[in-house]
Each structure stands twice: as C-alpha cells, then as structure tokens.
Image (tube, one colour):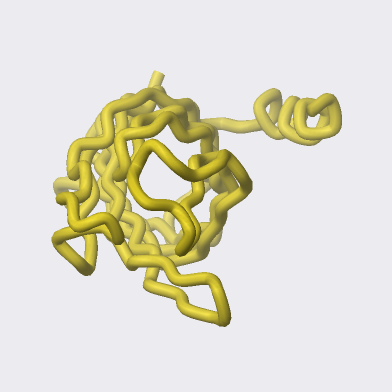
Length: 166
C-alpha cells in the first residue's frame, strides 16, 4: 500500500486539474447476471480524479480512485489511469481516450450459487473513454468490453460517472 501512495502522491502534487467524482450508472451487455438477477444499474459512490491537461489537441494523462456499489450490489474500490486527447468543440470540450483500471471487488466463479458467495479479489479492464466537459462539470463514459478466456468470463458494460472540477 505504501508503494501505491508513494507512486500516486507526486502525481497529485503536480496535477493541474482535480475533480470530485460521483459514480452514476452502468449499462450491461446482458440484462441479468449469472444468477438470473438483474444487474444493479445505479452504482452510487464517490471518487477523486486528477489530470495533467495542458492544452487542447494534446495527449494528456489522468488517474482516479473510486469507491462505489458495483453491479452485484457489493462495495468495490478501483484505481483507473488513462490517456486522452481533448478537443475544444465550442460549447463544451470533448475528450477521447483509452483507460485501464485495477480494483478490488467480490469475484464470482462457477461454483458460487448466489450473490452471497464469492470472494474479494483483484479485477481489471481496459477500454475506450469519452468525456464531455462544460465549465466545471464533466460526464465520463468508459466501455469495458466482454472478455472470455478459459475459466474467465466477464460481461461487457458501459460505466458512467460525473465530475466537478475544483
């Protein structure tokens, strides 16, 4: 944990854009989860984001940390990092990029019978992002595609969160 703090602290100190985040909703590729229940579409939670945005039409780096209620209605902690390219499109700014995340959440296997089973473990993903900025407000969309390999099977989803620049 101390290595994560030592890595993230200098990034925070030198960042030039900071936001408080409120998590929003997810849209899944499937309506029901592996247990036949509807996914939790409203993922309430809070987070913090900082970025190194200097000028339009340039690549910039950002990172965030979020604590929220996941699609199985369990607490989840995530750290995300990505690069984006921001455009001034008149009324609002638009950024397009690629983001990845690593987090701790309850993970289910084929032997789990319901949402009460499962154990906490590491999770992660990578996907394209689109962000819209209007004055101090922002809305961010991240699409994490489905992935299936051997015993790993995930459902793709669109995750949305909102920000306020301070």
